[in-house]
Image 1 (cartoon, rainbow, N blue to C red):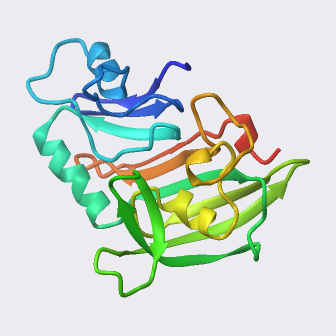
Image 2 (tube, one colour; image 1 turned 45 degrees about the vertical axis):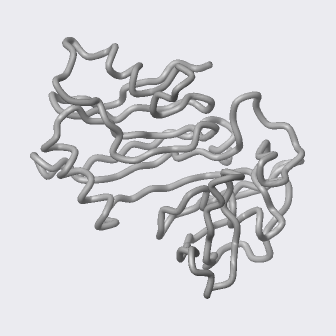
Image 3 (cartoon, one colour; image 1 turned 120 degrees about the vertical axis):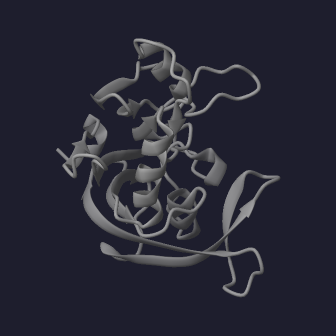
Length: 216
């Protein structure tokens, strides 16, 4: 597995690149995870945390913001809640969706037993509104590359919405794709993240795309 990388850090939080296959938080089985890795990089054990401001699925690579300050946790979380954060994803599928760009607007239901999200009728009592914007970026011999901007942040949203349209992500057997991608990952990358530093008001932008998502 690729080692995580800290791209930015100050006395209260860090922006870290999470490789595919690594969990963000500890589980009861003691699997390697990003929070333990970050804690080991700090010069001294924090009194609180570290805690993630947001999360990525285990098979997804990309940027994660982690803090060990309660004050910073509140300030940063507010930006996520207010949806002022720019989060951009790229993905690969073996099939194209109907149009090259547009919006997916669905109602998603999180099945806790199957650990899966499914598109359900709008009137479903446990359904939640899910919206994303997508743009086709290019095609290789065996895959289609899309860029996605989330307008809502639902459980497995991108994976479920593309699968619902017959285009599950490469390597995502959980949503019906039978094409191999990587042993511990799926073809989904949270490669761009932009937000404001709560103390300095500096606009922070982090962007990194592995070769297969670069479009070149």
